[in-house]
Image (cartoon, rainbow, N blue to C red):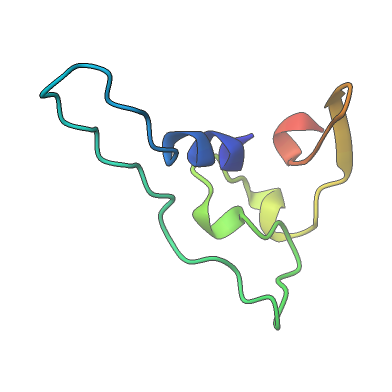
Amino acid sequence: HPYTRGLSRAYPRPVTIPGARASPLAAIPGAPPDLSRPAPGCAFEPRCAQRQAVCIERVPAAVQPAEGRHVRCVLYD
């Protein structure tokens, strides 16, 4: 899922080589949604690099791609 990949890239990694510098953290561009005014589509759509036209039209259905995992993304429809 695009949001999960963004979170993974933003997670700090330990520096294991003495004297080496830590890599800069990757940011998810844009701003989080205004929860007081929910949009009609996917809440992550404005910040998603893989957004599609349908993402602004409806909230994706919940899908279970693996045991114990759930996602709401048109990429998994």
